Image (cartoon, rainbow, N blue to C red):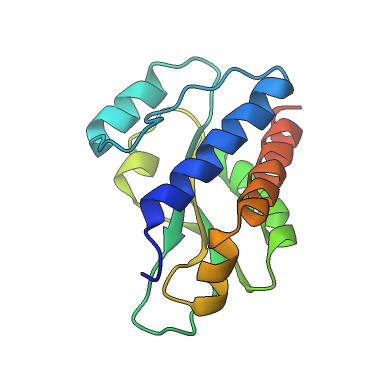
Length: 155
């Protein structure tokens, strides 16, 4: 990666938490600092919440430096609408290729008992995406759009 993923993803998640709190939604973070949390623990935290959703924020990497698409993964039919609205809003922040939503069997998606999605916000191995991810303004715009999507979904 041109820049480390963990800092970008955590910053977007923290900003997202603030936007959701301002909208009156309670947010539980599986991590709020640079510490590793096992997949099993992440799912445990998510499943302990009632009437909640689980969102995992990531920024991808690839062998091909030109890869620049965004995708949102979901694990169950009940998560599909959440994935769709998050992907639609996230795409408002980038000119990257929209790869849409895809069903996946990632551990956190298949073991969550609540609606769960994982978003890949571009590629840190792509110079343009990495430059965008390095921008505080871009990370804020991304968090704002994801928050709007979650608020829309909750209605």
